[in-house]
Image: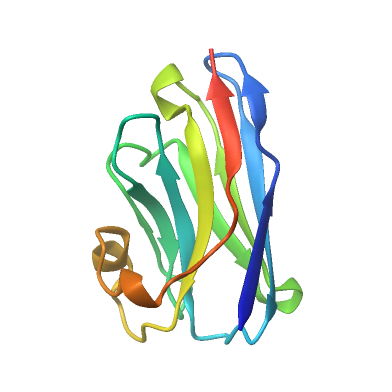
Length: 128
């Protein structure tokens, strides 16, 4: 079993920055794809950033150039640095992990294998 706990959400003005942290514990494997999804009120869940087993990063077009995902494998911790935040970034942000193996980060963000995902409880980000 895998546990994921997010932190770092909050309220920020447009143009500001936040950094989200996800701490993983339990039976997390180093080869897992890990990443961030978000869900705004009344909208479908959106995959926004992923880091693959070899460290390759993938981003949704909506956040490319503004957000940066990183992983500290030694600490089993995942980060999402969010810069130039916009009101449309307001959402609950979820950390996720998947046992998928291979360069499938973008497909995973679009829903590939999500029935096998582990999820955190989410953290609210509000941009005004």
